[in-house]
Length: 232
Image 1 (cartoon, rainbow, N blue to C red):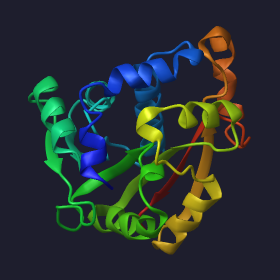
Image 2 (image 1 turned 30 degrees about the vertical axis):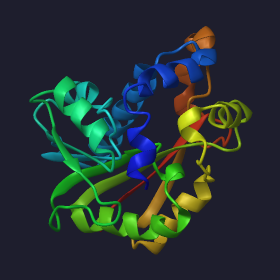
Image 3 (image 1 turned 135 degrees about the vertical axis):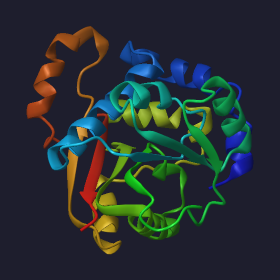
């Protein structure tokens, strides 16, 4: 993970992102919030209480923070990123709502069993493949027993996703990952029974069809997907 690469886009990240996804008819906030709703739903499948602590790995400017606050109102939120500039902007924008911490690109700077929920929202395609297993092992280390790890990613099998990534300035060095690749790395990191769900099938123009997405999570044509597993 390259701090300089992300620092240079920090000031204009949202505007670049918004222009890049304009074809969907949605703003970046739509994509940020659906992920948090999915996190809340998956976590609730296994736990009767909300997580006490959440780690947003690769949080950037903290776009997930207001939605984490909405869906996990009493949870301690930590945003971790390699870009100090992004963290400074996020900490100023969401002052008092989350703890923004710097990451050296290798070791998550927290002790074992520090978080009930760890997630990464479209981050791993920016990270060299050789580092994926180590980072997922770090996810497992900092999770509490029974805690949940979730990795959201762009789906390279979706042609619109490919176009969006190929034309996005801050994705110039990105390498998209098949869902089965992330799932395989979860297994290698000693997570038990990781599962895949595909998401984002319909643009805003067809939003009336979005309730059907709950029946389509097996279909590898969604614009994004997530892989999730608990720490045994």
